[in-house]
Amino acid sequence: MASTATTVCTACSCLCDDIGLQLEDDIIRRVENACRKGSSSLYGARFEQRRSRHLVEGREVGADEAIDRAAAELSRARRPLIFGLDNSSLEAQGAGIELARRLRCVIDDTSSFCQGNLVGQILSGALPSCTLPEVKTSDLILYWGANPHHSHPRHLSKFTIYAHPDYTELGAVRRVTLAAVEVRESETSSVCHRVFRILPRADRDLISAIGKGMAGQETSADGKRVVDLFRKAKFTVIFAGLGLTYSLDNDYLPFIEMVKQLSSWGRVAVIPMVGHYNMRGFNQSLHKAAGHVNKVSFADGVSSGDQFSFLEQVRNRSFDCLMVIGSDPFASLPKSVSSALEGIPRIVIDPYQSATSEGSTVVIGSAVTGVEAAGTAVRMDGAEVKLLPPLAPSRPGDEEILRRVMEKVSR
Image (tube, rainbow, N blue to C red):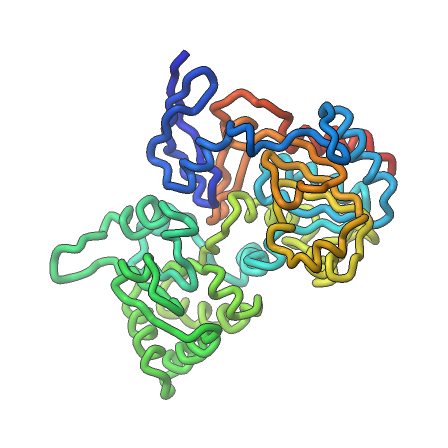
């Protein structure tokens, strides 16, 4: 039977809520308004060749047996590690954090090696932010180290320059300016009114030049041009990407000081260009539960530090059982590192097959959140978005699986 539905896309942290679907026999036949990433995600949700099956040591089993084995492995472990949850709902993240607390183990996500620190600075109040609808009242939009044409394809058209009520290419006076700080020409920089090209890892130098220019000191030509741009703006929104994060090596103090200085001239807001659709949700959930956005150990109360990051845990083989939920870290780890983890029980909860699920002790196939399972997610700007699935679930959701595991864990 044919029907239509409107849904939220979970292909990235834009969480676009205007996606039209044409359904027939519980299959998505047509997708409207979505970008190429969103369309691929929605059409591929029911591609069974990619979907995970319930496996125990490579043998296909029922969900109950897989969950029982996962609980048994976690119960036996002395130092388990939980990683992921950036592609899970807030409800599933809450269950994962509760499980970590019960196991008295380490929990982390991908934000520990990307933008978790930036989100933490916003949550602590060190950096001002705003919502995406508020961007339409700004007069300067700056992408710093970000190329949304690839990472968030509808970002410009739905939330920033092309959605801005003052945007026009006509007339002598421009009322909203689009700018970029980039190390190379990109699809995004090619449509910007102003582009500031810098050398790789030279973001700190540009920030220093801006600070000197604002203080009336001699500075570089680029520093002067950026300062002139900021001086004319009443409301500046900076979309901070991974280029800025990696250039600053997660040390945002110079950037924070620059934003404070700029705030004396007008309103400034920073929004992180978060990749995974609910990474900010995980950061906020863990911050609320434990006071930290990532890299948390519940082994002795609550503690956080670099030694609890996934990469350090892997480097030092600090865990004896690994549970990964909705993430694929083994796709990025060097073979020498992933090979060193052989022999450590690995539990994967994921809708799709991945490099991480391959060879895992236990694989539990889960529903695709937002397509087959309901929940709540947090957009890149911190706004909560309800996820109402258009399709019936073919597998249990992440939250259900985690709570069933928790019921069986003996600690």
